[in-house]
Image (cartoon, rainbow, N blue to C red; front, side, top):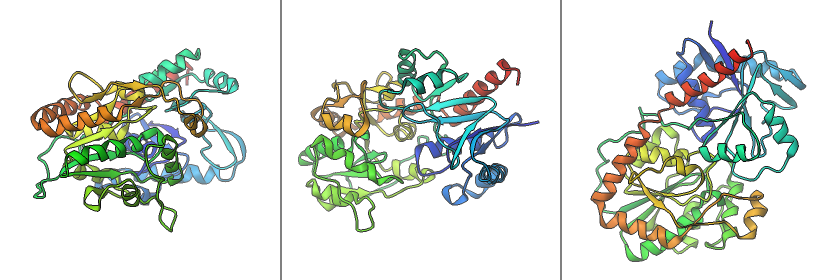
Length: 402
């Protein structure tokens, strides 16, 4: 009999946690031992997949709908008598999977990607009572162990090799040099650094164009980039949504120097990435390994990575361009926006420009690095992530005699 494993976060093609849940569901759809049930439910309209793979999720969608309906009738502390993957927030507190519910599994295994200092001794003590916490990076694991937690294991995110793999580039005739920046617009992701570096680079290379995939369901976080004072204030449309092209223009980029990729579903990203010459990720912090950067590398895109936090799990010899000039993030507004940020790294804008220049001048070296990056990421399919999560949960169940 297959064992249900409940997750407390959503399933989606449009944001990181959702992509994580989606790929667990896909990997376990035909697994003989386990299947994923999402306490938050699974909506077909949140998933951009081909009909066959979407069809493989029918049971998970139905089972999730039944559980969600049951939980909707309950309040207070509720225990589900099945293993549960409990998403933990930035302070190691469990997310609420349903309104007015404190959900516990039998057992509960924590899953966390965090970026800031932990301030609650009570939350740390509560986390220490979990049989296991799965983290998204060795940096996260190291931080948790520094707080005295020993019930910790790193399981890296993955990529979908059916989608993200080297392939012939999409033919193009415009001759432009395309720089990609991806991830929701926020201070932590460092798009202010991207814009500052690209502006300098484009002054030297007028054929350069910045391709941005910055949209997210949480546009309110975008204003955080203003705290670095590197760029103009973020621009929003009349509907309250982010206006990336408007922000690019406010920072001196001409219309022909900027392309807004919009809210591209995960399954369509490979088509976009195969038209890119180099990707730039000067992120200040990643609690995981940065899913968008992983997907760029998996497609063979030469990638520039800040050498800090979760990115360190991706960086190997000559498999990318590394931003090694890392300084502490010391400007005071960062703490106001995120809380204390030990371990964050401030990349050097001039070094980013230098690496963009290297990728521009020596296309063959860039291609070699892209190929090595793809070889690195070929070791991290989502099937591996799902297998490691499954093994961890079943190991805890066996240890507890469940």
